[in-house]
Length: 122
Image (cartoon, rainbow, N blue to C red; front, side, top):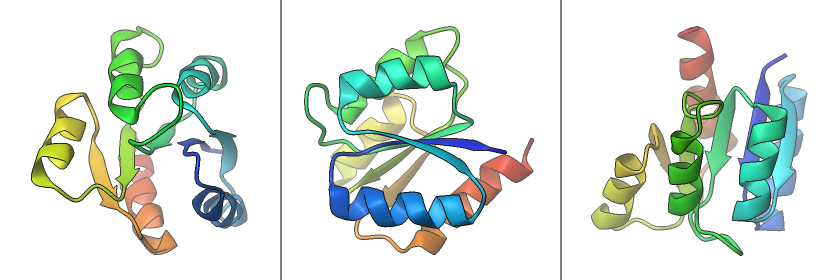
């Protein structure tokens, strides 16, 4: 079973997304802040991370940079999910190591498409 870590603090996004992914037979864990997200990524070792930018304690850019600096987590694909639509924000997400950028609001099929892309490459 593929493991997905969602690092996101908005309940109205987390709960439906988690339920959707669990129905698709993914093992899903959730962190609601950046620092906890890093710890959980290191313990849980997910196959992919869905990461918001605006988070309590540590923003998503810093979370991604920290994960990419660690030997154990540097190869985990990071998919940014954010309401930030400016080109500079999107560019920065890729500069810090993000592989994809999904703009909120999104439909669950957008997430599923990206997950399939990464899981079928293995």
